Image (cartoon, rainbow, N blue to C red; front, top):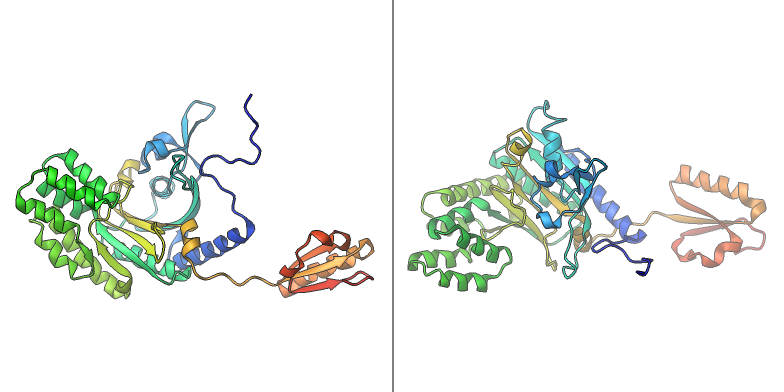
Length: 388
């Protein structure tokens, strides 16, 4: 007989204690207020979705989905991200609403983790979806809003890395004939394994010019000046169009006055396979993982019967917690001590302070004071005869 589970939690799940949760809630409010100021409206979707509807449309890998069956035998999933559920709503309940739609959310999402991964299987995301605009202005708005969100959350040092799926796909198609080889090269780039990338390129025995162009790809990280070098290694197809798109994006970001935070990275790839154009990730100083990410996904809405372009991004709140330097000021707390004869007086006083002074007030029987940390209170009101 197996040992009963006492304090164990399922793999990747965690408890969030009061002090951490207080800061997370404060950050969520900062993020939501910022998004709201840009004209985004909050939306909520169910934790459970049908696998055939949202699970199949989600970019999360199938082996990372939490699946279960309902009473009718239909497969359900715990939502692995929020973009697909919002696409479903935009194509159904909001199908008569004129485009563009600006929607925002804060929600827990679920992705199964391997035991050795050591990552959270449940985590909170806050994000936006800008649905119905194909213009570079929509991409620029999403990136500029991401900058504003990180600043509002108190992240002092960060960069937004911007890439383009079309550039990478187009360049690899120009140089490498086999699809399987292109996928392998993209896998090296996704994992930032540049040594492995170079070794694999050498094995392909490409013409000297093609090999040189792929090696040049690895160096394409920088500012506006990068675009000339990127254009020089393309021919005239999809990759060249992507360079033009990125040039237009930079001009729009200059109008937002956020280019100090922007870094082009034309090696950038995402593990979410629905991105079709510009994509980006936000990195804070001393953080090994991106704290936000997003991009353009013009093909997803068609899967729900409302074909239209879209872009968006999400912030991972657990990583934002680590990156945010600012700790919110604690609200004033007071303690009222009483014995049973002073109960009514103590409770009335506590209610008065809560309503009139907007204070946090705890009414505590004095005989139970031994377990209370009184250092957390700015003031103590003792209604007992003995004094404190």
